Length: 329
Image 1 (cartoon, one colour):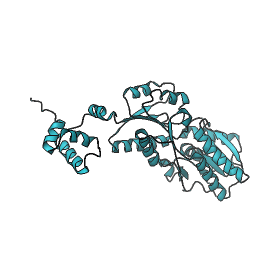
Image 2 (tube, one colour; image 1 turned 180 degrees about the vertical axis):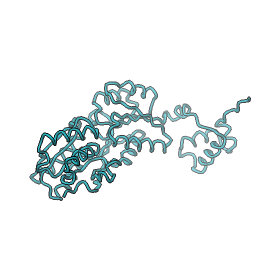
Image 3 (cartoon, one colour; image 1 turned 90 degrees about the vertical axis):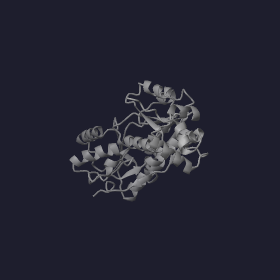
Image 4 (cartoon, one colour; image 1 turned 120 degrees about the vertical axis):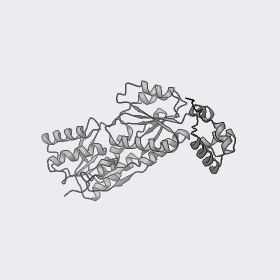
């Protein structure tokens, strides 16, 4: 059986009536080739079964078109949504996402492998990355490192995040406007600046109105089951529900576990709850969770832009999403 030769850029150029240079630039989406010509070249290429050589492309542009996405916690639904949005936008731009799952932050071998692939950039999504891990990824200064959601600009990496202090203030203002008087904050240990800003914004706004956080409960992991078990245990040992009428949960994953625990004690309609992240599960009729939307579409878009265009740190304004859980009876 005679093997059919694979079509080349020269074959496409000949059929399209353009130069080989034009074919190459058409697949690089460069402005020096008109949109009409690019469409014509790509259509003929598809008919001929031609695919551009990514290695050749990387030599021409000095870019591989590959972006590493580093995630440390798949139990947090928000990171899954953000990872999916980044992957979607990368693929729309003909870029290739490479997922690196690091549940054990001590194991950094996979990050070094990503650098050996000469990725165009590394995007960190995570709650528990330590400074050492992020600093280590900066050893190769030719590869841009972007961190979403954590303020680690002191490490020399670029950061994009929602304005956490403002978000905390807005949630406190919502509770105050509804007349609540006793407040709780539930979150993981506050070990990074972004989470501290979220807590401080909430606390400071309450203090401005002569109110305080009456309970501050720490959950060990961003995990619905862990949140449920810890709050259930706390309720069994403490008169937590006595007087508390509003709870701010650091994220929706924790908030859902809290609602499940309160529901068992018939307290879910007596205590207002607001989460953070606007994950899909929170929108279900089982929870109707009022939350704070971090605008994942914008975060993803700006993170990708940061890799290819040097920009300063970006802090965006999110938005309260009002459903039912912020109301109590």
